[in-house]
Image: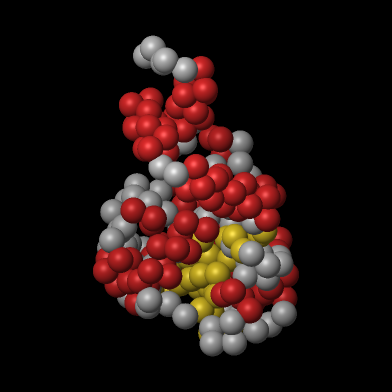
Length: 205
């Protein structure tokens, strides 16, 4: 692809590094920005830079946040006896969009994957145990992707959490094996949360 300007070429290459953006789409985005008022492009650039510079991760659940503690963890309206364990913050967005869950979350920031060299020590598991030690949590919902790595992580967590004597459940398998929560429609995900099962029943499926 030939470019009339090195500046345009550099901008296209920058956009093309984003997931799902090819060079043709990147070029359309660049041409769109060129047709806008300079102030519009400046606002976009400032928003991206500010997000990257100022974004934080909640010290309690590891969700993305504007403050040291996220709005979910700090909300007095949330049920503090229930914690939903997810792989990443995108899964929180998916579950929140269902409007059928009012508990807290805990973001692992990954899954146990021996094939990829990812073990329990590389995930946010120790901080989950520290939350369990406080004695307030009565139920842990495993809302991890229905994949081999997801099942491996659920199995591991269920073992180490069993000593706390809390209820351990998993979202129902209305989600196809191998799927990812962030791509599941809201109705299916909501029903999976509402129809969650004790982990022992989940193992026998």
